[in-house]
Image: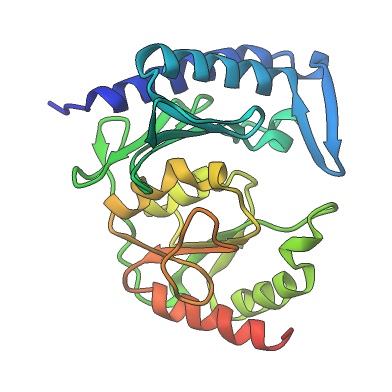
Length: 270
């Protein structure tokens, strides 16, 4: 029988409760009140409601733990060494266009280290979760990264920069994509970074790269990936941090060649 820690149980309960509300609103997506934060970056009433639910659940159970959330910002708890990092609706654009691929993501950090992560896909009822040193799971099944060793056999995932995301490097992305098209079996862009990372953890994707993500986009999935045997870095090969500009994730056999491909592509736009 799988035994989750108290903090992971709290995170799971919060993610699933928020997910149920999001699914209800997803059925009425055309009626949502939508405000525009910036070009191509939308936030809905459903997004804000989900974040409120998550924060209420987490603070009720763990009032001493701080919060970093996408919509409402940060709050330092009584114990400044601990915080939850929340994305209540990763894949907002998918959600608002009626595409059933989005997730609730919660990471838990102690002393600057991610200790636990939960990424919940309510539409498919897939809960990805992990705690440091205890393995990674999808629902009750243990997951591992793929065993593929060659880029030519691999399927990669990425995020494509769009209007309002010029800092993500449009030309650099095109160079990287051209390299991936020439050297891999395929590239997918599904629009939900937390699930992309968990899909690498589950062996559905062999690697993932993106530039310009925020801490809440990746915090929930990082422990899942590492506990599934994945490797993580920035595009230069340094250890990935929550404030890193790039993220490059893959299994241990592919990571070096994947990183080399991206570095060589970057030289063309340097």
